[in-house]
Length: 192
Image 1 (tube, rainbow, N blue to C red):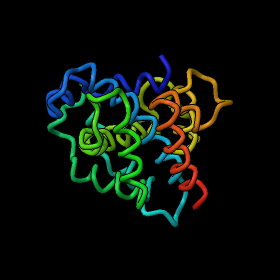
Image 2: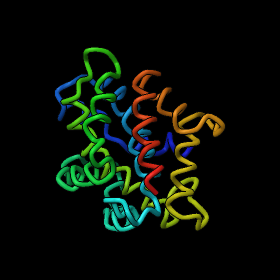
Image 3: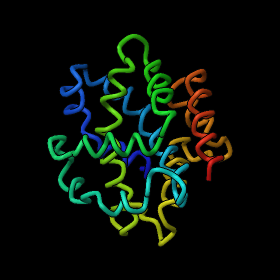
């Protein structure tokens, strides 16, 4: 199992589906699209002291115990998740949500993605923190958050690191939305 698959296995699909009022297949499709986008946004912010998100601080401040024994969505601080999403994507947040809202046809909307991202952000950051602390399979050997993110994003492409972020996003959300998100995240990366 890749680290990316391990991360996805931590996400409580049934609880999220219930919270969003959708079936599990719809929730899974939305989660599978949103997680790589969050990872890409976090990677764009990693080590960037000029960004709105202090990624290292956020990773350190997330309760790693959130992942122990399975995530209980009631323990996820979506208020903090909203702040993380705002700081990660900045003025491009609505563009990201809009592009993600085009995933999976009519069942997935911008409203659904706007609710989903703040649920996922603390889970993903807790996972990064656990990996940075050396916990779980495939733990980074002291490589830092950026290396962990690179490994996770590599796993999102099935180990094909040659395609870059645009390919990851294209596969995750469909080519057209992936291009929009690639441009947004490419712009974030350019702000380093």
